[in-house]
Structures are given as structure tokens and as C-alpha cells.
Length: 513
Image (cartoon, rainbow, N blue to C red; front, side, top):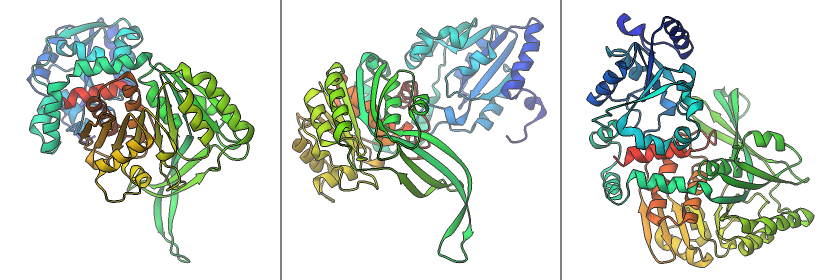
């Protein structure tokens, strides 16, 4: 944080120091009031909110959400947290302020435990729908004995100001969002997404361990044409079907994951720790290969992938193991509203398993991934009559053997060939195109304004759109939801975390203003 004036600097404290400071003030009989948010643009509505909050006690504390945890749509935050916290500290109403993590929403409220928590009246319904579990099921866990005070609300919306006065999106995207907001409003979309909680989902697919090894270039080897890199650190993420299960678990309470582990690599107890509590895993194990691990080596300074090493046996499972999986699917598939198939072509999803899913699932959705290990061999055309197919542009062009043809014609050709009710193709910077069996075609533009890592974005798109289709939501709404999820997913390194429903709702609320 850059140097600030003495009249402001004393107000800005790290969280642990702030907690100590407030403990002393509380012991002296002072009433602590807390307000929490992004505070990106300090407009008259913010001032009004803080004025009213200040009157509820003796000490007003404002917690400012750290940049990485801001979920207010594209181009947000406009200003970095170092400047946002200084702006807040400069306000006369504010006694202390602090930059805080908000990966778990309102976690800082639990830590600070104010006497009064102040939030805007205008956001009451929005907050309830975005943070449904917090405000309906876990309020006491987050807010303890704090009294919630609702101010008169913000007469100005920061998101609306950003959307209308800053060039976050090109004109065609702005036009799309204006038209879309006339047909769908935030409350209706939130109700649709919240209705997915009781959907029962079975996910079958290749579980993958993603390792990111961060390096820095040292120089060219004197003896070969090789750039030598120095190892710095590494991170381990749960990818493939593991990541998809965690995405789905944020939408649906009942998720069964059927996946394959190997004789080497992470074991069941380690994998379970990386899955959300409402994901019930059924692991099968092959003795002739490892759990799939993909190690990516990355230049930390440039954030560019240098090379990748895969540990896998991509021969199809067979014999007794395949029969065991098939018998299990026959017994359970019909109990679920939708079966989702995440086929990475790494040897788990055999022809026999595909035919079983086709026969026993009420509805099934499928994505067939093209990657370095299977390019040209893992085609969607091996499936018949799926309810929903989700692919990227290269995957559908390979399946259709159409390198340059119109994408809508190409997608239509594949939809008819496999007999899908719905098909969606993600097009990177060009958004997505979706279609149904009735001939409707929908194009939705991309909503991302910042891309950190595209790995896992397609999985997130599939994870959210498949349950939406299973519930019967319309094509244009599902396309919008998918692209909003994609915009959030590309801001996450690999599969470091799942896209959460509250993040999606906050993003949707922001872009529709």
C-alpha cells in the first residue's frame, strides 16, 4: 500500500490489529458498527448509507473486500483495494477500515462480531437471493449476536454507473444485455437458479489432478537449445470430474460422483478432502494405471504455460472392472433427474458404459473433451440421443470434419447426427451458440473482461448449464447463465476453486443494471 497522510493512515489497520483495537473499545463500553462491501465508487448513496450507520453506535468500522474476491461483474473493481480503502478512510464518518478476504462471504463479520451490522435496505431482497444459505440457514454462524440495521439504501448503484459510463463492453454486448434485461430480471433468474437445489445429479467422468508448478527462467543452457527454469512453488487442484462435481454441488444438494482412480497417485481419502460435503463419491479403481495427473509448468512472471506432462493410462478399462461399473449404473442411474457425462477420453468411459447410460438414464448430458492425449479420437458422435451436448468450437468441428464451415450449420449437423435435444458450443471470445430440436438458435456474447486462465472454464459452463436444461429453463436463459459462469471461471487459476452460485448471482445482478 502506498504512503498515505497521517490523518488517514491511522484508520487503516490489518484485520488482526483491528480486532484487538475493537476489543479495547468494546471493553470501554463503545458500540461497534460494521459496514462491509466493495466501496469502489464513493457516490452520494454510499455517503448516506455510512451517515445512517454511524448513528447506530460509537465506532464505525468499514471492511473493504480484497480485489481477488470482488464479484460485481466485468471491470470490477475499477480501483484496487489499496485505493478503495484509502478513499473510505478519508471519510469523516469512518473510524477504522480494513481490507479483508471475502472468499467466504461475510466471514469478516464473524471475526469482528460487531454490535450492529449495517446494510442497505435496497439490497435486502438481492442479498437474500444471492446469499440464500447465509440469510436463511446460517445467519447465526456469520452474524452471531450482531443486530442487522438496514439503512434507507443506496440512491445510486455503483454497478449501474460502471455499466453505463465506462466502456467495459462493446456496443453489441451492451445492446444484448439491454434486450435481455427487458425479458428477464434478476429476481426471476435467482429464483430459477435457487430452484435447482432439489435436483438429483449423477456425474460420471474422468477425475484429474491438476498440478501447477511455477518456475522462473534462468537462461539458455550452454550445451543445448534449452531454456533452463528454476522451480519456485506449486499448487495442486482437483480437476476433471472432481472440479465439475464441486461446481454442480453449489447448485444442487444431491450429487453422486462416479469416477476412476489408479494404483498410483492420490487415494480416496485425499480426493474426498477436495470435494464438497454434498458430493457423494463412488470410486472405482484400475490396477494397470495411475490416477490421472496433469503437471503444468508455468513461468510465474509471465503467467504462461511452458509445457505439460501427463501421467495416465488411456487404454479403456475392461473385463471385470467395466462390468462392475455397468452393473452399478444399471442399479442407480434411473434414480437421478439427470446423468452428466464428462468424457475426457482417458479410458474410463467405454462403449459399454455409454450404452448403459443411454438405456438407463432418464436424461443425460455429455461433454467430450479434446485434449493432447486424445485429439481426433474422442468424438461426440459415439453418443446417441443425449438430452444435452456441450462442446467447444474445435471439438464440434473435429466431430463434423468441418474446419471452416459456418459454425451454426456445423453444430446443427452434429445435433441432428447424435439426436440431441439441446446443443451448445462455446466460442471463446465470440461467446456461445446454442440450439434446440425445434430449430431455435441463440447467440450470446462473451461477458469476460479479464482472463487469467481458461483451463476449466468449459467444465464450469457445462456444470451449470446441464442442470438448468434438466429443470426445463429456456435456451436463451441457459446460454446467458453459461456465459456468465464462463466469465467468472476464466478469472480463476485452473480449478483452484469452484464457481459458486452466490458469485454467479452477484455477477448477474451487476451486468443487468
